[in-house]
Image (cartoon, rainbow, N blue to C red; front, side, top):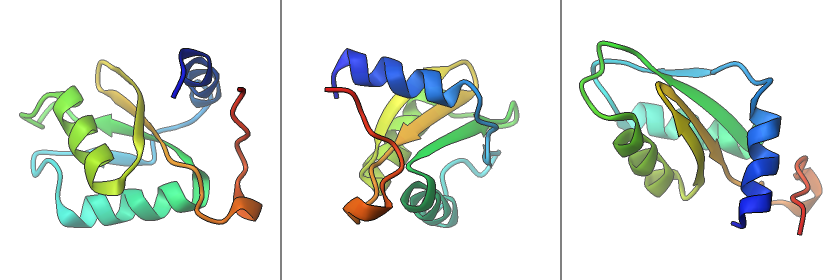
Length: 98
């Protein structure tokens, strides 16, 4: 992913509300499955890491991205943004700049 594409996705993510919260149990298989399903439906997902989570936000982002085969767009404080294009080209909503 180029810096131009990453910047474009950051702009889209500005208006998104976090749809998942990572708590003290950190990254569970259920959370990973739910994020994978949301990425397939939405392509761009924002997560919130709660204060009671002992793991670092960047580590959590890397773990979830690896397990869901997505890309980390950004990690700012306790917010994580992930991107994965939809498998079906007709269902893709986000068109990345070249």
